[in-house]
Length: 429
Image (tube, rainbow, N blue to C red; front, side, top):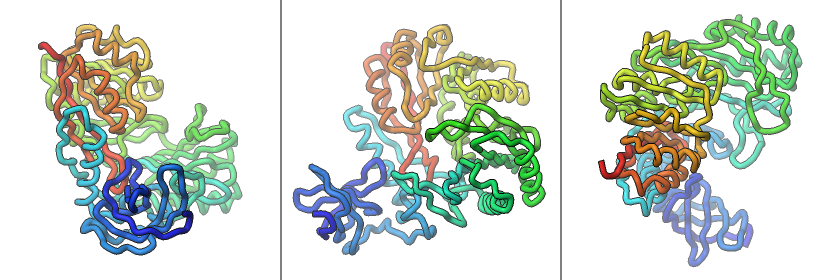
């Protein structure tokens, strides 16, 4: 079967962006095939009940098909949908959500489009390996080099080019594991993070000075030392080589400071729309608990509507940032605590009217779901970047909470990913 060419009709899309096509009784996952298309497909791998393939000849194209503007999109793992019009991307994402939430009796609203579809990423993480820097090919650790990336913020390409040139000139590129860039869209401040294998402060301090001389838009440079032999990007130890070690950003009139390790939404403008939706049901008399609060971005947003907000976060640097951010914005009705939301949260839930959840991709723990149920909290606002774990967690809560609508936001144009907001209300109230 391998290398055989079969005619297939694409009927659906998988959660990782492959077209799900059929040839008689054979199911084939086809890279860059769009639902509604017919193609002759070359089989690249065969499993027991399905196969993988690539398009050999496109017979009937989808009206959503478009020419990719990126020359390495097919090889690079950064984009899934460069070959699909933006209108088509939104339609496909809504259909993927409808498939994921089938059985939960919820309505999927139209996906809220991103204000920017290119150059929206304010954070860039570039792996470096064997003298190459770029993005990982999908499902591998092979690096695909590129000169221009349409996802990352404008100006990032030039910074990366100069940084790599300086690393090569100084013969220190082999010491680098990752290059990290972050930009404050509301301030234009830029952070350069250099993740290295060993601590050589004098060498890197001089290198940082040379990079800043060439790229004066960089306002701070942070050296991160990671000696681990795994895929974790950031190590524990850091040294500030230039500037204050943080950058500022401004969103919807709120000022925040962001450190290298802090979580911050990558799409600044869409973040504002997402938070406005999530906080739209909060009332001025309510006491709110924000779990997974990070540097306090949504806590501060919510504090303008609610009576008081309590944030809980496991990353110490982020909690420090959050407290500083509350002070910067003169918000005295917000408090932040260092704790693990996967543990016992009952002490924080007492007397709360609403809980905001914005967990990582793995969703909430069974223990947290049980605590929410036992607390009787009237309202839960769940923000999720992973529809699969959101559907699972809603299943854990559905006996005690009502929910009827999922509002998706396209936080990540040209990728298969989508952010969602769901409001849950306690039954019997």
